[in-house]
Image (cartoon, rainbow, N blue to C red; front, side, top):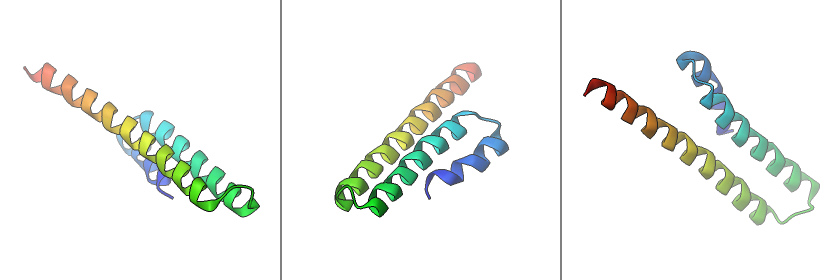
Length: 77
């Protein structure tokens, strides 16, 4: 699963954002697997929802990294 790789990053880089993003993505992935297995929702809809949730998590991570970059550049200026 995509979100699991964020967990070691949290330990390696001592950042809590990695754990939040991992949790977000993993929860949506597990929910998607459960919905597909229960056959209660169309698999294409589930895949779309999980993809959007994963994209939102990745975008949040990117925004966080941009903020960190700006703080580092401001500190060096």
